[in-house]
Length: 298
Length: 70
Image: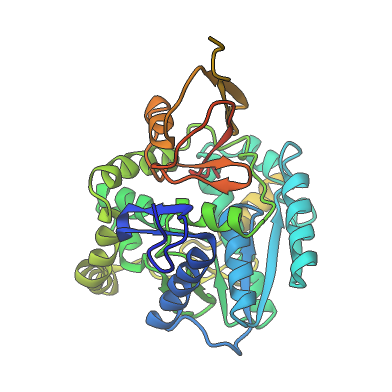
């Protein structure tokens, strides 16, 4: 296969784009997809301070690299979950990557915040992935609000977004469907959230990380085995294999044709939020989930 | 007549190594592993292989699954 742009030997085949790319042209393709997502959804400007959530995986590190190269005003934030089997290695990768890239990095330690994930896992009955996600989102938002960032960027890719959309659609979850998208504006107590990789598949971010020589954290979280989001991704990949481009079309069509209706429905009857009595951040209960977990752990 | 050298395939995530007496293309390897074109990176000598690329006797290939697991 030849590169669709320059005719050199291709290293990346993209059936969904009817294209193949050599490493240099693939990086151009990748940059343009990120640029297009940021501009099309008016995510943030070059000057606005933006926080990038860094797990140490291929998506978040690729996103930070790309935003730095494109000249955005970014700072990385890593959350150390306190899981002995995986957290020290993930943190070391993030710290080494940011040092080599010359990027600013902040680290929040969940043990110091009173919510180390192993202890949280032992005290909750719900699936730990859901609780851990809630805790991470809480601290990303809090850190961004406390430090004056205009937006939080996460490395969610097309597969993450489509998997989540598929799950929300199976449940016809009006609340979640009303605000799923690559860009969510800030509102009372919440900083804006952006997903600049939403046009790029998991394969494309993996190829970008490899071709850019990014040393990623590959060991999966020891608690994520059998997680439902992995099964949904595999299901969607089978669909994409038979019908290249189906994932992006499903997602873009949702944004264009369906989301406005769910937004309107949520505006009519959505759950009202109020400041948490303990921490002041928005919650639908009197005391937010994170404060309740923190109190339970003593 | 000497036998051609086998092809060694390392499945990175699974931590397993497979040995094939002969493979013709990356596409054939993906079929043997029941993987789609964009399910994994097929790596040889620091390069990514598209499905049409030929695999030579004695090649050492790494297969890196791309679906993240949290």
